[in-house]
Image (tube, rainbow, N blue to C red):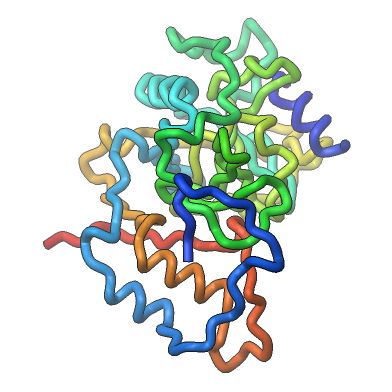
Amino acid sequence: MRYHALLTALLMGGLTACATLSTPTAATAPAASTGPQRSNDEILKSTTAADWRTVSPENLMLMDVAGKTVMIELAPSFAPAHVANIRTLTRNGYWDGLAILRSHENYVVQWGDPNDEDPKLKRSTGTVNNQIPAEYERPLQGLDFKALPDVDGWARLGGFSEGFAAASDGQSAWLTHCYGAVGVGRGNPPDSGDGSSLYVVIGQAPRNLDRNITVVGRVLSGMEVLTPLPRGTGPLGFYEKAEQRAPLTRVRLAAEDPSAPRLQVLRTDSAAFAELTENRRNRRDTWYVRPAGYTNICNVTVPIRTAPTN
């Protein structure tokens, strides 16, 4: 399959504003703090409405699998052309009745059209642009990017933008392959991924894929539906028989579904998020003997909640 080739090759083979970017080092990273530490629950209970960002219904993709719903937030700030394709495919019902094609433990779960390489059988993608340029990175300028104070082994800076784990070299920024990240399957040509085949990271962050595949979003809810899927019996976890595949019974945008939940993400430029991140860096609850004084972007959890009704 077109998305098979590249993934095979790749498998083998407080917070600082972007206006004052600097490269953190082990010597300059903040030492473990020793003052009073509020619990995460206390921090979240003290947040105000201004600390939360409501996910746009146009960017919330709802995917029904095995009687449960996986909720994916799309990231048009990083991959506008691919997100536009995905929205069009979703509105046209392209995904309905397709399937999860692959489950590779500690790596990815992938879905799309099992007949993708057969011109006679594959499902039409309609009017979407099937050959769009890769969107591996974007200019840092104009992006609200907040860097962690710790060294990132894969980039000059690791941090967050609009709730998404991201990295930067000081000039460009890109979404990272942390747990739950959703990317676009492709073949060898960089422009061969149109958004009709997607995957989600379900294990140890394969950061070697950063800037090699377009990342279009992340799963906000429903990872428990995807991670337990049995490993495919074929190479790289592809399912070899139709009955092994989990069908996608219905996929839609929240904007098209009046019953869709309104989700909110804690703003990653908020003081509350900075405090939560420091808690992650320096655990001082009674179980911990020695605080690490370090974390990385893939170990930081961004809180999500259903929007209050009043």
